[in-house]
Image (cartoon, rainbow, N blue to C red):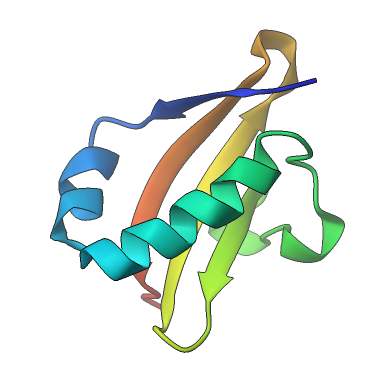
Length: 84
């Protein structure tokens, strides 16, 4: 089943700030995630429990998303450098 991508209201501004090379890397990873969004090793804990991450290690950037199975939707929440 293919999930539809939706963006949180603040996501677009953060996305546009990223260099195009970083956005392209995330797009490739998101193409895989829309087919299989539940990746146990990418589950987040703490304040972001119930969300998943995509990390670009060399760039030091991550994207956080939430899966809404009942709506067949992946909500893109935030993207940027990790803030502890």
